[in-house]
Length: 190
Image (cartoon, rainbow, N blue to C red; front, side):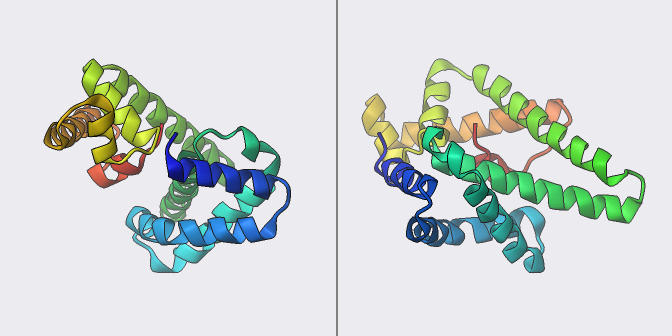
């Protein structure tokens, strides 16, 4: 089990019990990670704090679910993506005035699920080794040297394989009409 995941799961348990100090610690742990991500996704400075607050508000409201979450980082990133896409969708709608808000929200949920499904399909199509490396990195949160050690491979092999895997996933998504920059793909969690 990855050490960071252990700490975060412990924090999740404390937050589930209503521990506000643990919630503050989670907030301080994640804001340096989420701020640049939100900016890269939305390219809008003034929305960062709103989305951050919304993400943590959702975490606090989901306290009862927290003990069952295996990978806190993936779960928090998923909420963040969801909020960022929601914001982008709303902005696009405002400019076009075509889609009614309810339909826009529904579309966005579908887009998110569809993209997740395509990423999973693309991962399933990777070679067994690339699949293993990708999952250890994205799902289990292992760093590249840890993956190399776990699988008995050189660091360079792990780097090259992961980079090819990401490119292959991006190409697969593009064939299906979903265009994600590599950076966003890197953050995308299973």
